[in-house]
Image 1 (cartoon, one colour):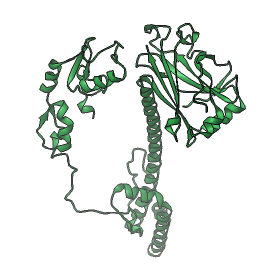
Image 2 (cartoon, rainbow, N blue to C red):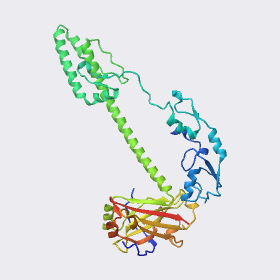
Image 3 (cartoon, helix red, strand yellow):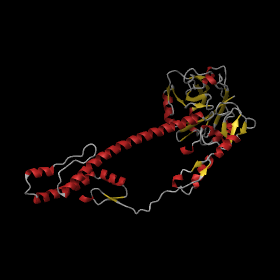
Image 4 (cartoon, rainbow, N blue to C red):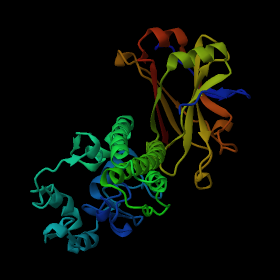
Length: 417
């Protein structure tokens, strides 16, 4: 890759019909007036800005070092002249007292909201409860017919009943056979009506109430009760399997939603500094080389929480199929009517060399207010982009250490001026 060669940035248009290969504790919650909009926690060393917003001192200091403007309304701020200590709010927070979460166990300490986490960590009542009861093992429900297993908990026994149904049925059949032989020998004189009555068994009703069955000898009653229990436990296990499957689906959906929310937060609060990691790069490159109309688009990222939104496009150059083209595109946001148009700013690219950082390719360009690419977008993504039609040779990117573990990294920094 010729790093000394000067490249001129220009406006580029994405051809129509492209196929995009896209990447794809509450009890201590503060009131809104005591909450820092940056860390979403209690205000620590609260300060107030000239535009009337409150922040933790450390939060707003770190924010202004990166952006220079208020995270709420985008007004330019200076730490020296626009930030003042808010002693009134500080006193209000210090005067509040909260009960220890372990008050039910005997802790009577009341602390300020800012000291609650430290107290919980050192609270003498924050200990796991121990039991002085001797360990009791639960025998299997089929102990009476020969099962010798014992369990530490009811859940273990339920799992055993679920897994060993066949062996339990065998035990029941053996016990029933022995009982039948004994009954045949001892009850030979019982008439036909009594024999029929002894063989009848009624299932419990839907409410779980046991059926009224005629009294018979103890062994027969035990076998019937055990058989009934097997049926009930099997039904209950099926219901529990369904419940567990539904909960697993809900947890998976929640995890996906949480991950999506976190990614959206990172894109909105990256302050124009976005690191685009293109994974599975070899397969993506092969697809672009076979069809030059296929392109890679990054997710949309923001120059500030309520600022401009951009994405990055990487594709094979239509002018030179041996080179990559690299452009940025403006995207629509819900705050476009509050922004100044056309966009004015500085755009920096850096294609990271993951084996030799000194060979990282860096390029900077300034926006041009006369180009359509920097006017307010009329579609979800502006058709015209701005960047380099011949940014880097494909062969240089592959051979010179820019790809590691099948990942290409491009860092973009867009700053308004």
